[in-house]
Length: 161
Image (tube, rainbow, N blue to C red; front, side, top):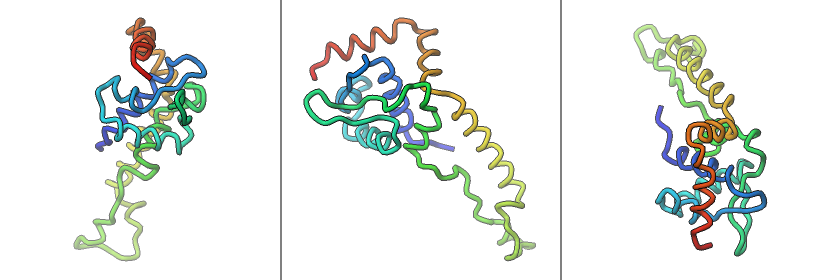
């Protein structure tokens, strides 16, 4: 399975938003500049996050993006789904139907062992992502790199609005 780079960009941007002072927002351009990303493309990811209720967007000179709810209530799966969509990663096409013993009256998505294996794997993957929140990620980063929150806030403070 291959996810778009937008997932990585969105997760890192959300993580940076966990360190923004309450009531403050960051523009797409400033969030993009942090990692030297194309602002227009990151803005599309941020708009997808806004549609999913993960971030809010405020217009105006002090506007920008901020988390829409506490990081403890935003899972990694929420972010992945906002960017990639809710569809299954594996889609059984019923390939067995085309084989020598294939039948039109069989639901191969349910009976095929390949399909069952892939679905179990996807469920395990989704459970893992649903069990990790932005707060968990933030806490992991802060444990392994304690200066990151302060350095992130300082970087944003040095940038022009």
